Image 1 (cartoon, rainbow, N blue to C red):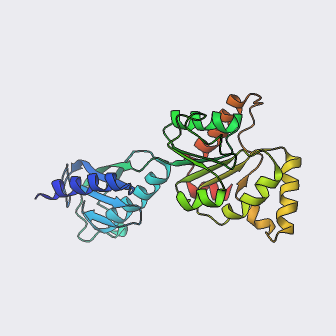
Image 2 (image 1 turned 180 degrees about the vertical axis):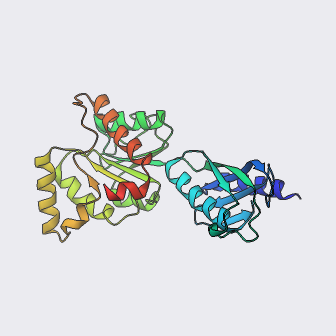
Image 3 (image 1 turned 90 degrees about the vertical axis):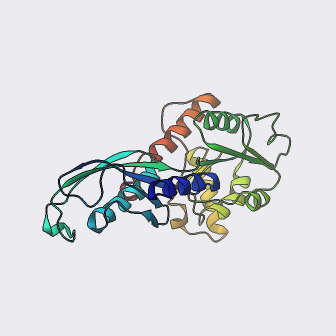
Length: 266
């Protein structure tokens, strides 16, 4: 089996298993280069590689850019010159290459906690935007296919049971649109130390202040709240459930399209 065929086979296997991966392909090569146009390499989410597009500093840079591509979901073309000794490329080939990076990642999970009017609107919009939509509500008559037909997974019952059935990952975006502070008080401790990429809570500034007061009484610390977006959504003067859903998903899209390092500095 040729190297490229093996890499394509591994790419298909990763797609079937839901493992995030980036396909790196040399699309232009000029001068003396270690690998020529069409050479391929896979970069997995944990930094592992399969195949090679030339080794050295160039390959290290490709891995770094590939991992960023998995974060923002964007393809990119990476130019690289092998003519500078201080770049660290053994042999200093003297050529130039361009590498096309194409991320393949499973759909992000949108976990909607609370299936009232806003939760229903968020779930529908999330489905339209290509998310894997998971909905949960302790009011079992709401988290159902009849109420939210386009959700991928319905988890009626307690939030603890929902987490057991659908663990949170770094590719999970959590939208809490619950009915009151007491529900938030029960759920937030399960979330603040989770690997979720986004946690947002609906409610006024006053409601969020009361929620924090209760959670501090329960033993959480102020720093535990730093990653929670509350009130949830971008400020667009939204009024209807559908408009609120747009503001929420807009905030999530903005976060996804912002490199994590830049977001951490904000």
